[in-house]
Image (tube, rainbow, N blue to C red; front, side, top):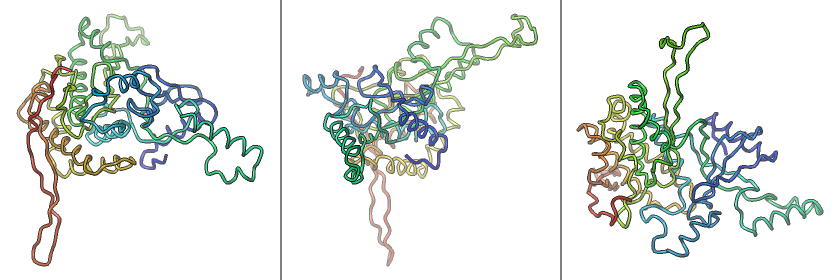
Length: 385
C-alpha cells in the first residue's frame, strides 16, 4: 500500500491500517449484495469504504446469501454476460482514474489496496491456520520465526474515500420536485449532473440507479452576526449542491449488453437528461476526449491498473477498451451536434477496435496502430431493465 504520488490517500490508508492494528475494525455494510465495509479511524469515524475482490457479488467468499441463492436456483440468469466476473474492484478504481484525468470531481478518490481485518469474511481454513500459527509462535518461538505470515492473509480490493453529508439521489430528487431549486443552484446541479453523465457513459456503467449516486445539498444560512435582520437577503449564503458517483464496480464491459437486459442509465428518465450539454462541460472534456493521444494514454493507464489482477486477460482488456473508445466517439459527436444526454444514450452503440501491424519501409520496420470502427447492432431482449 504505497502511493507516493498521492500523499493524501497515503495518509488515509495509513490511518486505516493503524486503526485496525489497535482494534478498530472495519464494519460490514448491511446494504448491497456483496461484502463491503466501512473503514474507520482511531476515533471510530468513517473514513473509507473497502470492497474486497473475493467478497464481490459473485466472489467465492461473498457473505450475502442473496447471490448464493441466485447462483444456485437460477444459474441461467447468473451474472452479467457483458462484464468480466469478479473485477469490480478494478472497475471502481478505473472510474476514479477517468474522473481524475477529465477533472470531473464526482468520484471519491478510489484505489486498489490490501487490507486485513478479523471482521472480513475468511474461510474456516484460513482462520484455523492463523490460530495454529499464533499458538505455535507463542509456545515454540523458534518454529514461529520460520512463518512468513502469522495473521490472516490480506485481501485485495478497492478502497474509496468516504464522503460525509450525502444522501441517496432518490431522496433529494423527490425533494427537488416539491421544492424546486433556485436558478443559480439549479444551474450548479445541472453542471454536476452532466459530469455524472460523462463518467457513466464513458465507462458504460451497467448499474446506475438513483440509489447509488449521492447528492449533498447544503441549505443557505443567514449571517446574523452583525445584527442584520433575517429579511436582508444580501446576507444569505447561497445553497451548495454536489454529486458523488459511488458504486462504479459494474462498469467497463467487454461488449455492449446484448443478451437479456440492457442495463440502462436510470438518470436518462430525469428532466436534467433532456437538456443540452452546457458550454462549461464541453470546455472541460471535449478537447481532451477528441485527442486520440489523450484517449490512448488513458487506456494505457487503465492497462496498468487492470493488469494487476491475477486473472488478467489481454484480449478481454482490448475488447473493454474498444467499447470505451466507441462510447467516447459517440459522446464527442453528440456534444458537437448539440444533443442531450438522453439523445446520446439512444445513439447506435459503436465499437472501435485497435490492431497493430508491421510496416516495412526499406530497412526500417515499425509497428503502426490501426483503428476499425463498427456498429453493435444486436439488442437485448428487454430494453427497459
